Image (tube, rainbow, N blue to C red; front, side, top):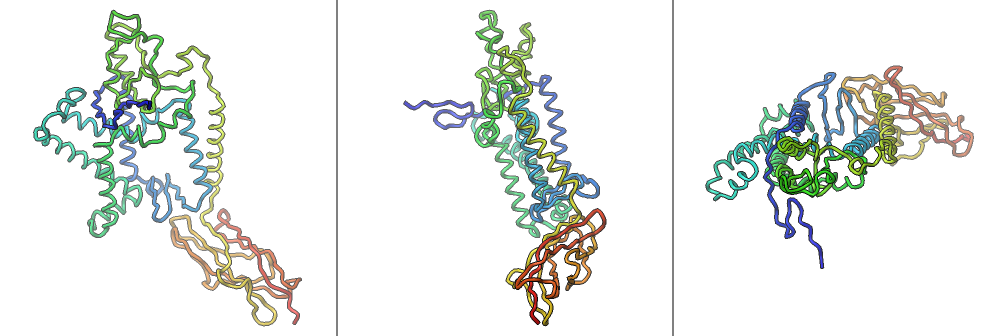
Amino acid sequence: MARTVDLSTVEASGKRKWIYPIVSRGLWYRRRKWAAYALIIWLVGVPWTQWDGRQTLLFDFYHRKFQVFGWTFFANESSVFLGFVLFFIASILILTALFGRVFCGWACPQTVFMEFIFRPIEQWLEGTGLSQKRWNQQEYSKKLPRKLVKYFLFFSISMVLSNTFIAYLFGSHHLIKMIQEGPLSNASIFFGMLFVAVLINFQFGWFREQVCAFVCPYGRLQSILLDRHSVIVAYDAKRGEPRGKLGQTSGDCIDCHKCVQVCPTGIDIRAGLQLECIHCTQCIDVCDEVMTKIGKPIGLIAYNTQAAMAEKPKVIFRPRLLIYGLVFLIGGFLMGAFGLGRKSIDASLHREAGRNLFEKVGQTEFVNNFKINIQNRLDESQKLSWQLIEPPSAELILPEGEIELKPEEKRSIQLLIKMKSEDFHSEVGSIPLKIKISVDADNQVDLNSKIFGYESDD
């Protein structure tokens, strides 16, 4: 016989269970509130700030460039991005192994905006907990006016967040320009912005905690990222059990169910670690409040480790942390080595497609055709100097003459290398080619290839 599981937000039949949490405004809530508002101000405000004359954070996928605290990186800088990815993933792994899902409860935009922007507006209009549930059970005509106000406010906030998203992708200055030009002048971006606004409104207005339970992979990965020494929000069963009404049990838990009533994902923390738990600390605040009222020590629900609750020795340096730390250092090294050592120009040397390896000119000379793909990584013009290092007897020909790259310009440049036949010492031979392109002493690029030709019998 198949076994069914009744989840906190979904019944075994698949029907949605709506969550109407109350808010416990204890010590941990106040700490999270200030952290959340600081993060909201940062996320919404940072596209409007500048660092060293550039937008502080810009992720311009259309032009394949990214501005980060005054640095401009391009999509072809794979070593820097590999280092960043390793560094970021290792940071999340270390944070999770040490402190569980602290990111979910304290810094995840889903939690931050839901619990400190959207839900407070909803609770202001509809009430909280059981009163909100009863209000929503009314006839729709009675609750329609407040619902309209709620979704108007929700969509207005969604529009702000959607435009902030556009500012991250296209630049805040470009966003202002598009607003001034009107939606019809930038129809595709405008409708993309509306789509994102509708998606945000859907996420925070209806889908909500289902994101954490069914969409986000982070919660499902916690079983392999955590160990018994990871800090989690945990219920001390040794102290709390057997639970029961006040004065009728030896355990400290009086089975008031307030920890369930405040949980934004609807779980019972007393059942142990669950994938829906986002470590928001609401159960800690409300349980501490109850324990204080009944004269018991606080901390029945607290940040703790499974090892500590089992009275096992504390272990800080575990194999997984050493592995995560190694990946962290590798990522940091790659970012530092390739980021700080990057040149103001990037260039690559290629042979002209569809052309012969070489062409004979007159009776005693050969020409090899090359193409150089070059990019200016700065937001200012740069004049390039060219020097043929090897072979010294060859002649470098630039059909375009002197090259000056505009700010952040990418260009393909045709290059000819002329070589005398007497420099080849075989029927068909090759000679190493080395070209130096420079802007100044600190920004030089060496390009290497081969020159082909043969020794003439004439």
